[in-house]
Length: 501
Image (tube, rainbow, N blue to C red; front, top):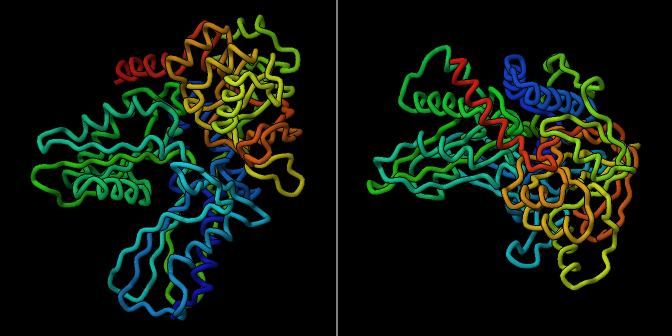
């Protein structure tokens, strides 16, 4: 007899658990990539991801500021017995999510918006979850909980191929277009067959499996699907995209594939990547009580402790920064920022641009300031701010030209690449774009010493904050001449990898 309270408690514990514990197989895979990486920029990014992971395990704080949309796969045994009559299983699962995301000791950022096509109102507790039900034999309730970040979800693709088309070629051609907004290195989930929606569901479900590509390389493929996994894995890493898109040896840590019978006229293929904040856990309820989740031990984490590179990094005082200073920065240089900076994401940028169009006075002066694309997690205890890693910068591209031209903003900080229009605006305005590491949110938050809301408080995590930072690590991703590391780095490393082979 499975109790309602055991379901609620297990779901709440699971989403808290995965917010600060990476699966061990993921840690091992990132460490393997770190040890062999030859690109200094990519190796530094991997070091930040590994250090962040350990800090989160110790502090029990989110791996990423984007604590994900709750996704739950539920298998109901045909002989399952429940002690509830008037409550729906869906309601119990959502109650567990609600408790997890509003936990006072480790609040998880609320990112789910109701009325997505119109009002986009934050539900404040990350409900409702996306739930997939399936019936199977047995007496257990089999559950997988996953928290999927918006950056990697945004890079999902559906391809309706002809039966004679190459799946491998299609996937490889799609990866460069995904950019770095999915925070590589990560895992590619691929679903083949069924109908369009089935292919995407298979892709998502494949990501719930453990990483085992190195074992497959050693043992060799036993069937066509394993051959396809190895082909895509090898070809994807030969692209040279590397960690955070900076150029390097490892772009994907594994390739997962699930397939399903399909119509003779079709070959649906779904592609969903998992990011550097890979978060999922699998457990069963059998009536003996709530799930017992076993945390990793610190010895599971490699001895990688990232520290600011004080010898080669350039120290920057944000409070007296000038365009002349920016003009000296070169693509790929590492900076340590100290001083005051502003924050702003999609909603804040839209409001600012709407006010500029109406010639209204802005609530904050952006002249000679730097803006950080971030929506932080709420602070707890003695924290100044919760995990506060960068969000995908391309979402702000359509606002960039107006903001730079009309406000006197000096520079921007985000993650991943910028589009060509944004790069042109940066060049024309002699600005710069700086990149932080996606997947190192808790580590970045340690550099934030003061925080206050200065505009649009009603937007919650999307409000404009002012941070005071000390030695915040960033990389010059687009310099004032319009040189982009995300354009140059992968090209350079694609050639190097070809020479190495």
